[in-house]
Length: 605
Ligand code: FEO
Ligand code: CA
Ligand code: CA
Ligand code: CA
Image (cartoon, rainbow, N blue to C red):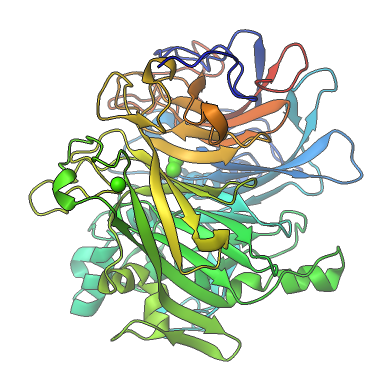
């Protein structure tokens, strides 16, 4: 039946129709600006971007490539300014360099790519009369972290034999962070960054002979003889036959203190090693952080970490130092989900079972606990160090539920319910792969779903939970879609939910990656509570070849990262598929965009 009346507060805008514009398309009455582009100088001494004169030294002081996760943090004492933190997931050399020869990259190109990966911290300034944001170059907090910056291994794996290399015989200091995808913000003012598809940077697998090492590398997809970017030709640590442990030093959650430009970011090993998509904490009543985390791979798992330490309040140096240890001690769990409908009613088409919902109960299975005197494994046949470094293998052993690519996760600040984007899984139900189950109800799942998880007694540290599918994505005309029961003729089509965020009104905002409906990716808002629960509306679309990342929904502003615009098979600098954001004759550039309402009111009110 039709729902009449106003849209949910925060979602009162005219939805953007699906399209294939090479532009960021926003609702009527809204305006936008590019906050920062790949290559814009942020550090003192960095030159202006020149596509024909790129150097590694220049890039190391400029905003990196392929911005994914974004965080905007307050900056006290500097009115109108905030601290923007961005992940630079990976590089698209063919779209960066004229005449790029993928079989024979030059050292300079490889070193530019090293410098274009990683993280950026850049202060941004808002224009008083609008929502416009611009970067403040050379601010004292501005920072670049790249493939050659120092990161400290912290927690139970620090010093382990499994992470020792020739260059780092103590197993404590890693150069670089790679493939940082989504992330999160902690209540103590730091940011978390998920190292995702780190497997692609390593070559030499064909020369690894130890069967145990081979099996472990395989489970993480580290299986190429020659890597896509050929970095192993320029630095031995990317050659598995020379440094089989180097890959064990990636695939972690990184914690960064953006307010301390001198600080060394930590890889938090107590949170396990997998293709970390994101990490978002919620506090227990007694102040302990619980971090929810997805492993973005078909048939991989959903995890949480429950700290055993309480957050210290107040702004003292001692409190802050204490809080920087919260993620080093606690228990790592993996999720097992059980449906409440008969298995015979889950036919793989997405047809709702007779109780009208894909739902059920779940258990958090402990994998290992890290404490002040060392770590304990809860998995038979694996040491604690093995559980942390080869977490996927530990989760395999305990029978965790194989999910449809767990991407970003966000606990609702209002209700505490946890939302997990499951982006798609085209192998579901194929020969040799797991068939549909109630939480992953479609075989050959092209469009994905969003799961809502409710911890028992709404306590994040609980070891049991209830769950239901909040959205089953796709074209609403497709009977195998579900929008929390909202009338399907009143919602926007959505495909491949990826990053998620909450607005101040409790609506969930979802950005997409890989829209399988034939139109461009975008950003959507959906009501999670009240009588308009499930009302989903498209707020913007992104240019050709791009995915939509890092959404931040502040009261008066939406921020998105437009990642890999122009990334279409066969495209190159010479044959661009996109010329966003600067138009014909210019190089396509991943960039961050701010959107606001022209009349100055809050978004969607
Ligand atoms: Fe980098 Fe799973 O997206
Ligand atoms: Ca992404
Ligand atoms: Ca059910
Ligand atoms: Ca993602």
